[in-house]
Structure formats: C-alpha cells, structure tokens
Length: 403
Image (cartoon, rainbow, N blue to C red; front, side):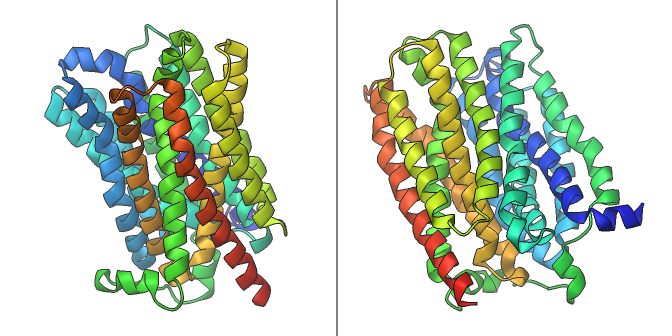
C-alpha cells in the first residue's frame, strides 16, 4: 500500500484535494440553498439574513491566513486534516441551529475551517506535482469547488428537500474523508527533501510577504484575488435575483446558476492545463478578456432561457478560469518556507473581495439600478483584476526564464 501511494503521490494528492474542494464548494453555497426554508423557520429579519450569509466569509478571513501560517510550522497535511474536521463538524452542527445566535456562530466556525483548508490544498497540489504540471494539478483540485456549488444548486431544485440536507452532505462527507486523507495523503515532496521549515512568526509575517523583492508580487496577487473574487461572489449570490429581475423564472435562474458552476469545472481544468505551457501570459489575457465579454453579454442578452444558460455557462468557464489561474500562480510567488503564509494571506484578501461583492450589488440594486446596469457597472472591477493578474503572470514568466 505504501509503495502504491509513493508511486502515485501526485494523482492521489490531487484526488484527495479535489474531494476536499468539492465539499468546500457545497458548504460555501449551503447558506444560499438553505435560506428559503431556514429564514422563515427562525423568523430572521433581512439584516439578520445578511449576517447569516456573511458569517462564514468572516470565518474564512481568519481561517485562511491562520491555516497557512500554522501549516508552515506543523505541516500542510496536518493542518489540512484539522481544517477538514473543523468545517465538517460545524457544518454538520448547523443542522441543529435553533436561533439566530447559534446559526451565525456555527457558520462563522465553519468558515474558519474552510479558510484553513484552502491554502493547504493549493500548496499540496502544487508541491506534490512536477513543475511542468503544477497548473493542471491546481486546476483539477480547484474544479471541485464549482462542482460542489453545482451540487448545492441541484439540491435547491428539489423543492421539498429538508433544508438540513445540504448541511448533512456538506458536513458529514468531509468527516468521512478526513481519515482517508490521514492514511493516504503524503506531505509535500519538498518537505521530505529538506528539514521541516518552521515558517515565520506572526511578528515577521509582514516582512515575509513584502521583503526580499516580494512586495510587488504580493500586492499584484492580492489585487487579482480581491477584485476577481468580488465579481465572482457577486454573481454567486446575486445571479439568480438579477436573472429574475430580467424576467426569467426561478427554475430557469437556478438552471443558469448550475450551468455557471459546471462551466467553472470545465474552465478550471482547461486553464490549469494551458497555464503550464509557455504562453501563460496569453492564456491569462484570453481568460480575463473573454470573461469581461461574457459578463457584458449577460447584461444585454435577450430574455431567452437557452441564451441565458449558454452565456451563464460561458461566464462560469471564464470567471472560474480566472480564479484557477490565480491559484495556480500563487505558489510561484513565495519560497516553500513561507508559501503557506503567503497563499493564506492572499486567500484572506480575496475573501475581503468576496465579502464586498454582495454588498456592492445590494447598494446598486437599492439605488435603483436595473439588473443589466449592475452587471455593466461591475465590469470595470474585473478589468482591474485582469491587469493585476496579467502583470503578475508576465513577471513570473520573466523570473522563471532568468533562472
């Protein structure tokens, strides 16, 4: 068994990280799936509903940098298992929520675990794969998240489903996966080739991210994550409402969201394969430009279901490809001994963007903007993220060629 794992280290690592990402995708969209049944049951006000939706994101802001920093000190595998158990237990416990306070507390704790897992999945998939296949490995890992989102959206189509089902699946499955990871996943290959890095102390974290010529890379990575995740989470939270505002029925809006997530699965895999080639900058430019085009297309398209589903799928391909590109190049921005902390900080900054996205859409809708106007107004935000990602990719290519 040990020899089989050693011979297939990369494939096993990617598979286990993919499954973890799949369950993360379910949990990240669990609140939206449960909300129509849960909010009336607990008699939550609109303000309380907003806090319920934001609670896990706030947990992610803490969990991502903390999980990355701890992984540099205790090991990525150990921290991944701890994070999986944390988000699995608290996601499962969300089914027992009995009032607003318990609901928000459980979602916040779930978010801490979700945040702790993500930077370690990225690092493990990258470090356990040959350099010429790292982008594909991270893309295959990351495609689990939109696929999990599609699973959550599919649950929402079963109108009579118990609202607890999504938490049973999103919480119970990771707890079953944790012991498999403990047995089958190996630590990073590089960790076996050198003494285990202790990683930076908290007081040294700023120097870790900005010293030794890493300042520009860090700022560009943060800008790329922040602005692309702002648009992504705006769409994840508001796409059905915006489509309904354009005259589509609720079932059609749900089908568009499923197509959006499934498109993201395809995009993550394809761009992960392409990003390993010599034309990394071209791939990044095409991915972001096509996303902007499809976002504008969604704003001006005719109100026809088939067109909406097609454009929704294409937009999912593009915007998830953008995110997969950032996840794929993030490990290149930092040396191994500080990689967990670096990726964790970038993920946390990205979650600030994801927190702002729904708020931006809410402000635009509240000020009287139509669904089309909302989509047109967020396109420039994605342009800023595109510029940051492209400049970062070009710099990484240049530095790689120099070495």
